[in-house]
Image (cartoon, rainbow, N blue to C red; front, side, top):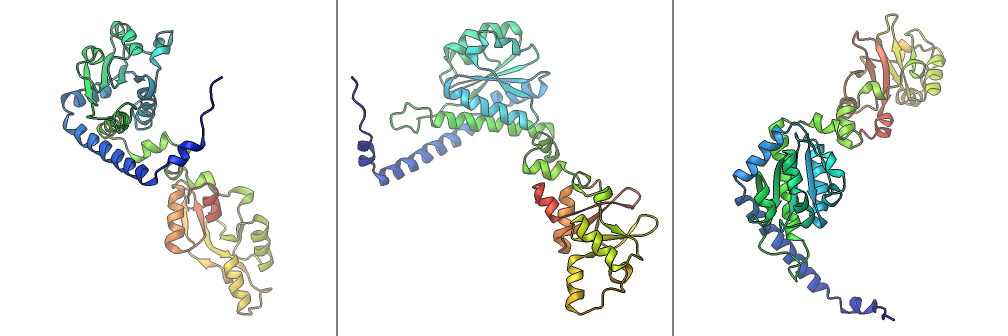
Amino acid sequence: MLAKPDDAKPAARFDAQRALRLAERTFDIEARALQALGARQGDGFTGSVRAMLECAGRVIVMGMGKSGHVGRKVAATLASTGTPAFFVHPAEASHGDLGMVTAGDVVLAISNSGESDELAAILPALRRLGVKLVAMTGNVASTLARHADHVLDSSVDQEACPMNLAPTASTTAQMALGDALAVALLDARGFREEDFARSHPGGSLGRKLLMHVHDLMRAGAALPRVAPGASFIEMLGEMTGKGLGFTAVVDAGGRAIGIFTDGDLRRLIERGVELRGLRAEDVMHRQPRCVSADALAVDAAEIMERHRVTSVLALDADGRLAGALNSNDLMRAKVI
């Protein structure tokens, strides 16, 4: 029977200062590896970027082991920054997944040694397909590099692992080189914030750049509105019934001419004003803060912040009241 390892022994031997020294050594080794990486990029890098720009299909990223994990991240970064890409496992490619690769694609194969058996096994098939092959490798004389149309040198002098075995600095270099490709490609494509938002609709940037006022505003029966001659009781009914904390005051043509808020109500009560005989036009704020219903929701948030208000009215293309929203609506949508 195998003896169970003594879990207490490693903890008992733990040296906090040594751990910190190893961490500092790791950062130093990997930082030097990244600094050296830039000096080795030239025609191989620019040729790789050009091949991906001219690609009529997708960028297919491949890699085994830790290089495969890096490859998945590289593919995701490319796809989210304007270069259609996905990851294909080299071993699965040998058993049918090579059908995902077409002649118009570019294959980015990642291998530190450049001698991965699984990648080497599919190189002839990739050649027969006629795809462009970009090799990211730490060995520019490797089998993978020799078969490639373009070679990205990701070599490092040493791994951060004290035994110089575990992929550490080499995978950091691969990750950085993948990021460099993505940045060069998005710049060449003229990729903008709006483009990024379209591929990240669930993220905070996507919400800020894709969500419009008309997506969030209260409209129709949910929109509190009264005529200028409405009684004070009618205004209170709209405010409490619609739950927005204000009511718009709208003329016969549907244009917003004022707004009355629960803050205005509190101030009237504090001043001891007789409320029962008042009408909307007597107490409303004229020239309320408005925004186009087609504007971005973040624009409504900016108006609220600039003017220190919690609500804005939304207008249609003809300047008529179309809806309204408050800061709670923006917070629920995570715009602010």
